[in-house]
Image 1 (cartoon, rainbow, N blue to C red):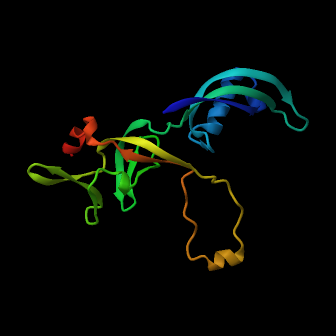
Image 2: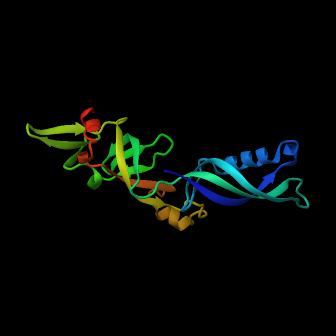
Image 3: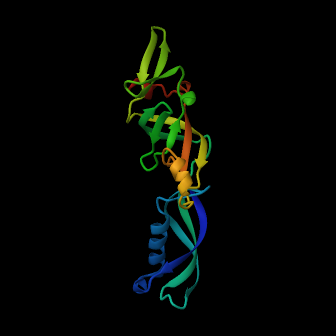
Length: 204
């Protein structure tokens, strides 16, 4: 679920921080810049793990700050495909079940990846698994807050860098603003009950 990624960046330290330990100032600046940010094709940055190498620091004309090229390792959330995670249901919609890990919410389990047969209750706004037993079918509701296990089956990175203002013509013909997309999202599949996980459904 978490990986260490080697990175290189040039860190600017303002002169009013020169009395501090250089490593501490660099660590603070790196976390300020990267923590809770998504790097395209890398994942969600969590926190600095360590600094592996510092190159020489330079002060450029017209800028009293120091600039240091830093080699470091950063903890990144980037689960591998087929990894099994435990999350909680954040909500349901016709698109599927939305799952949260607490620190990461952009996880969707589409209808075809739910326990089957399943149906969406428009009134309650929840997905219902029609669980078959010897006594007949029982409706098991996928309520908000329920803990579930799911398998990561796909991921999506979207470049959300600013593209500049839209032209007046495009803005006039557009009926609604473009939908905001998450820079990083996961698609999951609920694990089959045959793996001994039926108990956390029947407790709902």
